[in-house]
Image (cartoon, rainbow, N blue to C red):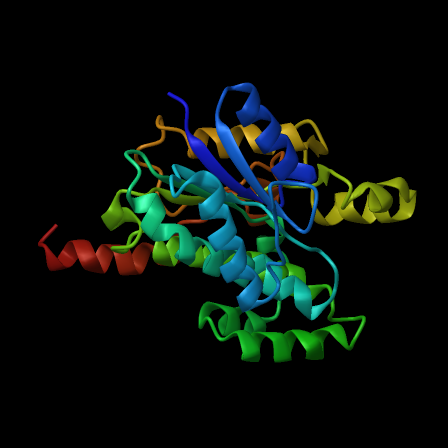
Length: 275
């Protein structure tokens, strides 16, 4: 079965590799990026996102089976929050009606294992409230100080994983038969990371904060293949998950028990049913 995909960030890195593999499988792919792909658009502004969605739908003839929002920035700047969060969520909201018309619609976003790292709660909450002016104002405050600028990226990725979990079970997504999930890579060898990894001192720091005991740094293909499966017809029941395809970083950093914190609430729900 051939399918029609829309992929943001398709000009490089994970997005480009995903598009390449899908085309090799015979699927139709419409890429969205600043330049170099089918749709040139700027996902950092509301108008740019609306135009990106309009042009992408025009390029597909209104047929969309899957969307993979991969576009992202890592710079300690406010624009990172705009692209990494609103550039995904608003873009998806615009495409949801077309997705809902597919016989097997699917969505998989690119989050990051940085969603587990230190962040700024105020920025995360502004993003989760879908309040872009407040989010950008807070991000500007963080960007003004070199000690806090790097919190913007982690905050945007935490917010994306939380958005996926919050929205996935609602009427727009699960209710419309659309599995909504995310993938969280570790350190991926892409143009965005090549300069950092080329610096031995910075590479050692990255390995300390992103421990990857399984096979070390990863290629974009390791992430692309998971994104492709999540957006394939075979995935019928994965819902609201962030899949940490990170060489074990999640397991190292969060340890063996990521469930116990909620046992009391779960037990109370079962008790209400006399269990």
